[in-house]
Image (cartoon, rainbow, N blue to C red):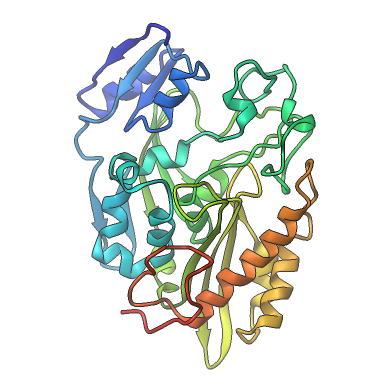
Length: 351
C-alpha cells in the first residue's frame, strides 16, 4: 500500500476543503476503497475520513411521504428502518440482497452510490484498462467478458456498475444532494453515473472535491409501495453481484397500469432506466403479455460486448420477473432471500 496522509475533518465544509486537494479521496466505511488500495488500483495521496462528521447519519421521514437519507447512514440501518421499508419496499429489498450482513452493517448510502466496477480487468493492475489508466486500452474486449455490459458500452470500456441499491433509486427518481467547493447542488440519480463513451475514467458527474451529503426519495415514489419489487439473478444465491437485476414499480387502478417504473442493473456502466418499457406499460393490463412487450422495449438497443449475448435474454426475463412480482403485490414481509428468483410469485397486501 502506498503512503498517504490521513485527515479527520470536523465539518462538511472542512471535509470539502480537504477533499478538493488533488489526489484526495473521501473515506466512509471503506468497504470498496480500502480493497482497491490494497491491490494498487486506488492510490490516493490523502484520505479524508467522513465518519465523524455531524448531521450525515439521519433518516428524515417527511410529512408528504418523502424521505431524506444522510450519506453516512449504514445500508442495514436504512433497510431495516420500519418507515422506510413500508414506503420504499423495493429499495429495502435491493439493499438486503447485496453483500453480506457484516458488510451491510458497515457500508454507507453515499459509498454505495460511488462504488466502482467489479470488472476483473479493472482490478488487475497488470491489465490494460481505460477506466483505471486512460488511453491504455481495454483488455476486457478480448478477454473473459461474459458478465460485461450489453447497453451503453463503448469500445473504450464494457464494464458494468455493481450496485443493487442504485437500481430502484434510478427507477424511483431519487435525487443526490452534493456539497462542493462552489456550494451545494442536486443531481437526479439517473444522471449521476456516466456511460463510458471516450472517457470511461470519469464515472460520475461529481466535480473534484464534491461530496455526497444526502439522498432524497420523493413523495411520488412512495405511491408505488403496494406494487414494488427488486429481482436479482446472480451466479450463487447470496453474497454475489448481479449478473442482471431489475427494479419494477407499478400503480394499478381498476385492473390497469396507470404508472410504471422499471430500471435494470448489471447491464451497463450505470443503472439503466427503461423509459420505453414504462411507456409500453401505461394503460395495459398487468399480465404476462404486457410484461414481455415491456421487456422487449427495455432491451431493444442491447447488443453484446463480447461473449455475453445470453445476458440480453436474461435481462428480458428478469424484467418480466420483477414486473410479475410487482403486479402480484408487495408482500407484507420480504422473502427469506430478498430479490431471489427462487422467491414465490404470490404477493400480498402491503401495510
